[in-house]
Length: 75
Image 1 (spheres, rainbow, N blue to C red):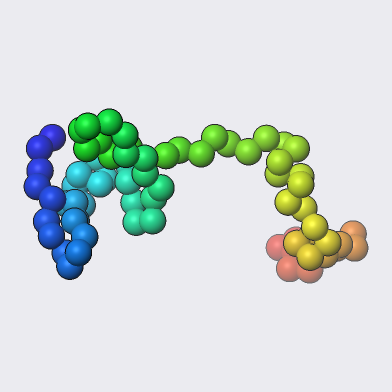
Image 2: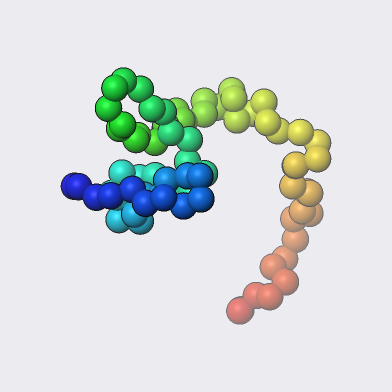
């Protein structure tokens, strides 16, 4: 695909179709390397179970629900 970057203030803007084709969205982290301008979104590797469990804290746990009969039962 060939397209043109447009000036917007002191920045350059790329067309939406180019961003969508490359997977780049607003606030995507990108890495630029080499003599050519090639924009590639930096994809984070999925978190491991251990990394996910490290994020669990008392503040973000769901409250316990006591077992019992369903409230809005259709029966």
